[in-house]
Image (cartoon, rainbow, N blue to C red; front, top):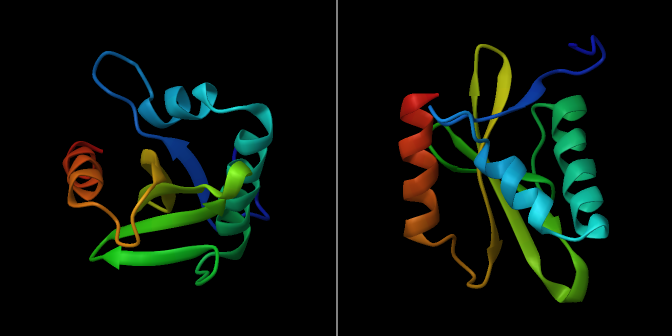
Length: 114
């Protein structure tokens, strides 16, 4: 159900098989990390358009939710906006300063099918 106080509402990208890759990735993380990422996604939903430190445009039409999780790790959820919906395309643990090309490619390919 759409919460009217949200500026945009998050939705998981769904593969043809019905799987939701970002949801699957989140469920593999521990509870504390899932909560942190979920709260950061919520900040984007309620504050859109929102910038640093929670969100950043990484290229035309592709954005990232920025989360600092346990053990000094950094998580990113890449998303696009379609029909006033935040489509969560891809999630990963960031290990380099720049967002890896491989991760952006996965998100871009999913964005084409969203």
